[in-house]
Every structure is written in C-alpha cells, then in structure tokens.
Image (cartoon, rainbow, N blue to C red; front, side, top):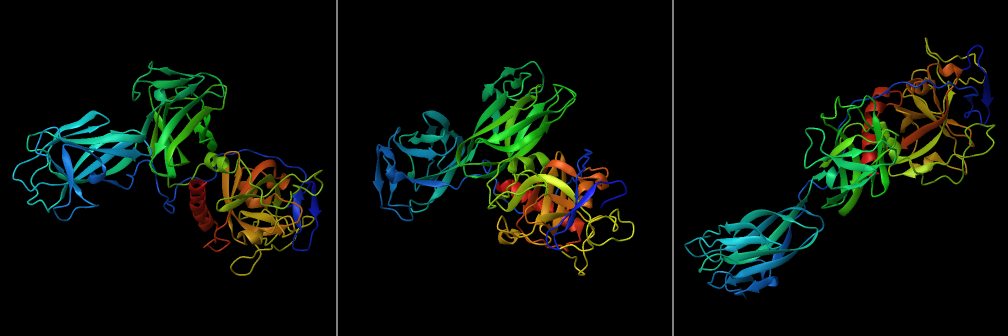
Length: 506
C-alpha cells in the first residue's frame, strides 16, 4: 500500500506480476511471533535405542578345554561347544562394537544335567559377574538363554565365559550382543579451548563442569558415539548466573545445527537448566562442539545428554542454522529491487525445501475487505493476486501472510521444484518466524516480497512506511498444503510440523 506521504513506485512486468515496492523501509524489531509445539512425523532417534543384536556362534570362537559338537538338536549355526568336565574351560568371543556403550550379552545354552553349571563372565579381562547361573534346561536338546549387561569399548572386545566347577560349563550355542551407546557425556572430559574445568559451584554432575573464559570463540567439544545414524536431541546442561543470555553456536561434525542458541540466565551459578538442540549423528564417532559467540563467553557447561529427537516447533536459531549455507539451484541470481546495481540473491536447495535470503518489499495487491490496512487508491495497486482463495477470490494482503515468488523464467521456475500456490513458507528475520503461504508472483528478475500481513507479523510497526531492507529468509517447503490457502491457522499448524521435519532431516 502507498499511504499519504509515502514514497512508492510500481515495478512493471506482465500484468499479473505488478506489485507495490517500497523504497523507504523502517524495521521495528519485536518479540517472537509464533510459539508452541506440534507432534510431527517420526524420525528414528539414535544413541539411545538398543542396536539390533549381532550373533557370534560359539563354534567359531576361541575354545579352551572344550570341543565343537553336533550331537544334540536345535542348535544355531553349524554346531555348539561342549565344555569338558573341568573347571577353567572357556569359550571366548571376539566382539566388535561401532561405538562405546552398554551391551546386552545373551548366551544361548543347554544343560541336560540336574545341577547348575555356573560360569564367570569377563569382558576385556574384567570380571562382569563371577558366578552367572546356568541351571538345568530339561534336556541337552532344549536351549535357553542367560543375559548379562557389560560395558564395551568402541572397536574389538573379548567376551569370555569360563566354567567355575569340575562339572564344566553347559553346552554353549551362541552369544548375542546388542549395544546401547552412552547417553551422557561430561563436559569436564571433553576437549576444551579457552575454557577450564571447575568445581567452585554446587549441584554439578560428574567430577566438575566447564567454565568458559570471557571471550568469543571458546568451545567445548564432545566425542559422541552413536550405534546408528539418525536424529537426536542434544541436551546441554548448563548454568548462567549472569543477567544476560550467553549465546552459542552448536555444530555436529563441523556443520552448524544451531546459531545463536540462547543459553539464558538460570538465576544463579548453582542452578542448572537444559537447552536442547536437534542434530544428526553418523553411526560411530561424532564431534559435537558448543562455541561461545559473545565476548562474555559461554555459560558454565556440565553435561551433554543424548535425548530422543524433539517433536515440537523448532526454534528460530535451529531454522537459521539449516539455511546458513546455500546449495544454489537457480540458473542465475536475482535483484532485490529493479534499480539494484547487481543481482546477488540465489535460490538454494535444501532437503524438502527451497530458500533465499533477501529484503522484504510490501505487497498490498488483491482483495480489500472492509477495515483492511491496504489502500486501493495507492499508485500501482492491482486488485488481483496470482493465487486465489478457495472461493476464487484474490487474496487479502492485509490479513493473510503470504509470500511473492518470481514468475517463472530461465533463472528459476518454482513449478519445477514442487512449489505452488498455497505452499507453506517460514519467513525468518532476526528472532521472528511467520508462517505464510505462496500467494502471488512478481517480476522475473526480482525476489524478496511478501504481504502487508507478513511484514506486520515480523514486527514492522508500519508496513505503509516500508518493509525490511535485508536479512529476511524465505524457507519454502516442498510439500502439498492440505489447508485452504486462506486458512492461516491451518498454515501455521502444518508449517510448524514441516519446519520440525525439515530441521530433523537437515
């Protein structure tokens, strides 16, 4: 809209591309627009769930004072091990683990005798249990299992089952091993830069915590093991006795998963809180780093806990991290305004979305209901939008948050990447997110525009006086919108779900 006294101009393309552009913009920052949570499509959590068991046959293990036999029924593999009737006979398996953690060791055995045949179980030479019971199973053809838990190292481990009595051990068929990766990592055991281990505050876990020095760039880097690849919650236990937030950037294997994560005040240095970030881990070893980004340094950091992947609406600092780098999919670049000296804005491809970062010019075209802030007498006003509502009417720019995409051209054609009228968009600026829909098309050479309602939602006090000069990210999800295009409540609900899926997938 061009109000009285405003400086406005009209950019002409084809008749359906015309929209109002602002040459004077004033940004008023405001608080977060949207909050709350919504359950989303499940992604597998890693590092917490037990990995599928790996079977190690006894007949392929190292055997001392025992023999491989096949003279009984119902065994697995190609045979089983018959312990000689002597104390000290054993079966020893060589077991591999992709990550350190707690293992469930399941031994398949048969005992056709009438008395217990206990054994000592050791892992890497350390006794796990000195007298694990292997009671009678009824016959030598009847197999049962005994289970014990033990810590395994990443890599190769030895598991030995040694007979305790002169009767020897039972017949042993196999060892099943499943590993649950460790879920807790103490900060004092991590790699530190410009940070020190301390104990001068109360209520920490482990043997201490990490005190970041008051400098930007200090970090704590955890070496994290995962039994399988997937998405987890990285829950940082921290204390911040100061009165201001101490933001940090969190990276996983060098890739940012949170930029400016707000480690806010906890009330005192003895009071601990948790901030959870979503990250994707590889199977095996991963590096998780939390780096202070302000001159105050980071908070005191106690522990990193691997939690199930979050399901609620992602925070703006998680979304910003996922679009902090660009894999360009457009054939060229766009200008932000017709009179911009050069084209500088690419369209980027993400997993499940496309994005660009530009300015926000205010679009007030379309239907003007009673009480609308958009002015139909403004220069360049057009009483139509490329996309129409479910009744066939133009959209209401003053009441509906929507985004303008460039009309198809050789630079980029939104139709080729599963974007259409009604596609949901997360519009991000500073600490605000507005969920909008694709609602109009614009000039083929320009990018960076949205409706009056979108600008208002991002905190622009008076969109009549202009939009936002730069730093607005448009994250367009490549998924059908099940809602009516004018249903903003539905767009927010679906958009929050798509945003969580996007964060978990990238």
